[in-house]
Image 1 (cartoon, helix red, strand yellow):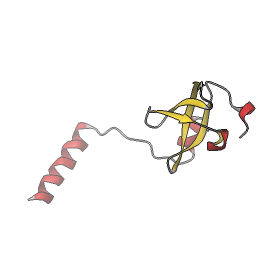
Image 2: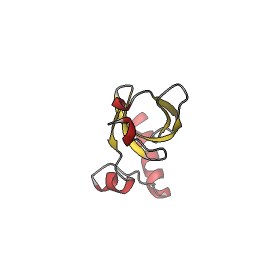
Image 3: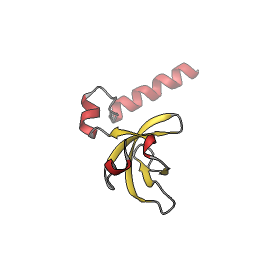
Length: 91
């Protein structure tokens, strides 16, 4: 991406360590680049150059429609069943 394409408050895909993750640009850093928040972990990251940005991040609903796993909350009965199975395996 180019520096003039980056807008504060928008979400972008960025290379953080060895992964490409969604980040939200919070504000411009006085030393250059931007301060951002990793949307997966809510940790602050610094984007030093626009080369780390890969483009706009897809909307959350688009990611879920694309087949990303959605966490399912277990019912109490399912939880007890899994716990009983775990105890039986340990015995």
